[in-house]
Image (cartoon, rainbow, N blue to C red; front, side, top):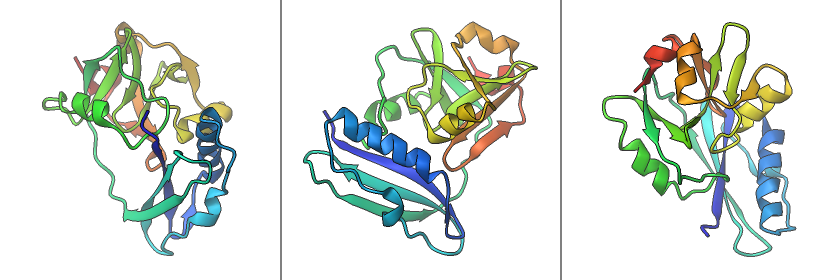
Length: 200
């Protein structure tokens, strides 16, 4: 199994966002692989004091005492206004691994769309870089079985701002709005409605 993982952490003018959620996910990975050497991520993150940055924190779990490597990248949002539905029943991305080969293969199938929306076993999951949520005129719902449980998604679930639900492909017709979620874009509502946003 590939044993290098990472966290993408937002830093704006030196302020680090949602670090406790990143810490939780990092610890879940270590626990799964039986690693007891847990570090405090906050101690390793020293972002620039000015500007919006994506902090990429990489760690390897091949041995009990692991190292953390942090790099900082100026962030420019990628504009996404269309998604291509891509079907793949065998994809698995439970942990945020640096091995994203399968995701890259699916992303290459996007045709003229900006990104993909992956369908696994007839259920909506994620885009290649974000969790997704849909508005049903009453509340925002997010797939109950995403490929990866993102930190922003987890935060919004705990705050009661979004709700989990199994979302089938045919369900897209009943949603009026769509939003993408990840550590860098937070909860980004797309101006197009769900039917136009998700290309079939």
